Image (cartoon, rainbow, N blue to C red):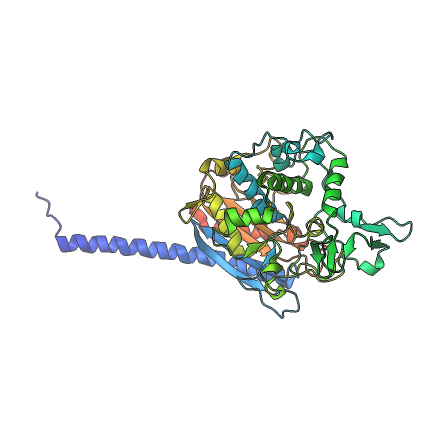
Length: 449
């Protein structure tokens, strides 16, 4: 029996029906994803209620487009000023990969720096010391043997009596009031106003002598050296900043502005934000700290970076979530953004994929520690290919090249004080990240770990 052929109108009807079904399925999936993403609201609002942080920005990018973008809470628990998408946050150690590492990658890309180079090839103060053989890759992997930190602030202080100076934890700030401590600043090391010998500003009416920098570098040169196994240390990136400035003959902030931030059109990422923004545009990080005994707002929270004048290799960047995401979108795009190339694809691939022998770090980037929940800063669903960094003030950015995903979280969890890190204790950042993976659902690659 001869089969009857379908008429053209019927064919068109069937095609339109299939199209409508596909659109409906797509819209339903988008609605389902958005419903899951809305769980982030509950996590954040509960955290604010528990006083984990007074406010935050959360931004998720998927395939180069915003998937979730919200600001929550206020600058402080007084709830007098709301967090806006334009609010600047102190990135703390997220500055390492959002700033210093970018500069290192650029110099590597230009052929001006090799990973096997010794830091002492560029830094004379390391020559003739037991740190002469430390390589650039060892600094990036945190396998240099340098201690976790040094009390640089002691250089500018003297005891009032026989009591020892207090020790500040690395990448932290002691919030016990200044007047309860038995110390004073050396009068020839600090000044209340800038002048020819005091040009590095620590905070309002507080300038440090120009000779502080050289004394701090010598302190690193004299420090004890441990075995070259993994030990996270801000000193590694402090030295990398020195290497960048020596090779480029340019200050780190100026180099990054010229090579990246300015041509990328980023106006809300910078060191020393008070040069272009008011304090009211910047979330405060601490109500009163040991070194400055006042609210820190617009000046870097990290004590090392503060005494280095606000521009340091380990900390100092301020930014919005949008500008942070744009920097990492550049890396996810293998060095290209809006049709302009900033880094070669080869350099981006090298720095974002290599993992140290210890398995703990990438070339400057932090990585998930799969199968070890106690050490893992990412959620369980994050693939091993993820790279990024966290910051002490309550920040993070994680990039997932497998799923073309960027997750940015910025907060000032250190306000009013940084005594107990509830953000880490309650796993807020990885909990949000897990919701993101639940939302993209079947889009997740099966190649997980």
